[in-house]
Amino acid sequence: MTSDVLVAEDVAVHYGGIKAVDGIDLTLTPGRICGLLGPNGSGKSTLLAAITRLVPLTRGRLLLDGKEYHRAAPASLAKRGVARTFQTVRLLPDLTVLENVQVGADLHGRKAGGAAEAIERTGIGDVVSAWPGELSYGMARRVEIARALAMRPRLLLLDEPTAGMNQAERKEISALLRDLREEGLAQLLVEHDVQMMVDTCDDLVAMNFGAVVARGTPHEVVQNAAVREAYLGK
Ligand code: ADP
Ligand code: MG
Image (tube, rainbow, N blue to C red; front, side):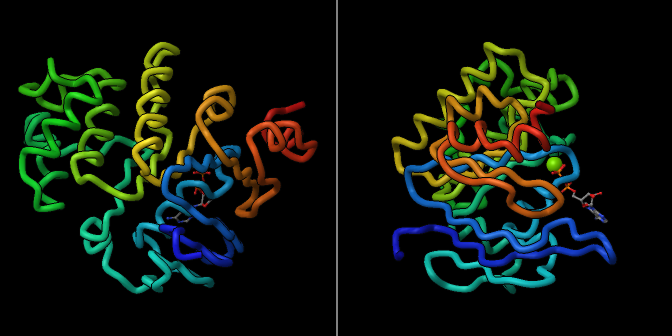
């Protein structure tokens, strides 16, 4: 399966007695958006942290392009084409929006080229001179996405990128992610908006208590009885 960008095998992250993630298998492929659904505390952000090497694995294997990387430094992943956004916005407060996006481009050694394109595609051209503290929450999230895109990644991991955005803004972000898919980007998307996930994703994985409860096409997963009970409250 050489075309897979990322493979996670039996990944577990335990914090003492808390099994935040407990045996997840995941494959991320160019030109596909994999969605991760699950209630608060089900382990979605911890799985992203494990994939991006921000927390150590308790168990399991992580492979990029078929090679194990589960001891790699987090910073080295940017050079290998892995970019992410965080559930809580993490912009550098003393840098302008433009400078924040350029941080992403610099990580890839591409300077302003990647930044300019990322700014245009995320629709933040009007706020490039602003400070992060002056931005609305939705705008700040767009800047985070721009910074990740400025790295020109092959794999993009998005942790609730549209939280705090209105319906129209969500649709814009969904359209952007689908455009990126057509360009061959592999993506992992965490979102709570089930309709957006169905409209955006090629594959869905539903988690609860650190484990997968269902996976398949979006329609299969949202029809799954365990998912409806655990997540949709039906
Ligand atoms: P989600 O993103 O799905 O809401 P998280 O991955 O943030 O879930 O959390 C999964 C579980 O792990 C929760 O029970 C949470 O309290 C716990 N957890 C997350 N991070 C830590 C940590 N650094 N130390 C201890 N427990 C944690
Ligand atoms: Mg989370």
